[in-house]
Length: 223
Image (cartoon, rainbow, N blue to C red; front, side, top):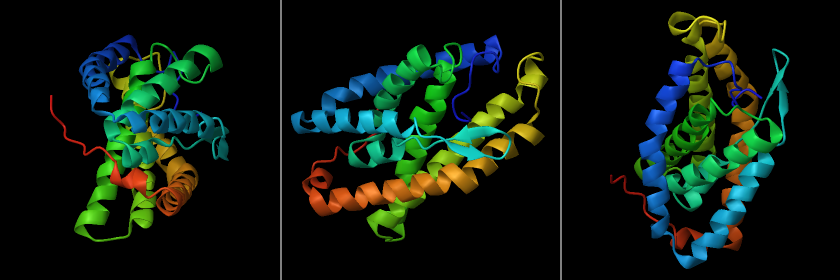
């Protein structure tokens, strides 16, 4: 699956770099959990399970592989981007250990792409459209999900594409191949799917449980 980078595609220097990057991010994200209100805990559990479920549904894309949505923007909007980082950390670990989706050496890079880049870009895109441009929340959430997953895919493409330059013998495809392959697949398949699913979930929650929006935790990036 495109967004899950398997073992052997990123060299040891790149893998080590992302583990070093993720250590302080994991520390901050798990510390953030103390901000959860008691009634948000079951919500985060349900959304984590939802993310795990939607990632198991794969869409065929050109090139003989598949793409999938992640659900990180939904968690970021309904709880917090930091909560999304925690959720995706758990989901991706389970997938790597028990389902072979993504590698162990590339685990930190996968969490960075899907658990940091995707939810934070998706969330702040959503906030920009709702607060600055005054677009309604449902449309803004779809736009955020679309931009978030395409950005995460592009980041993965960059990580793969720099390998021939810094550590030959791992991913053989340069940036001119890896970035378009990752970006275009998500622009035309997973991106629209993520936008529709995210918009639908936010619409349903606003209609059936508007209180969940009232109790969202304001995200403040403090280290």
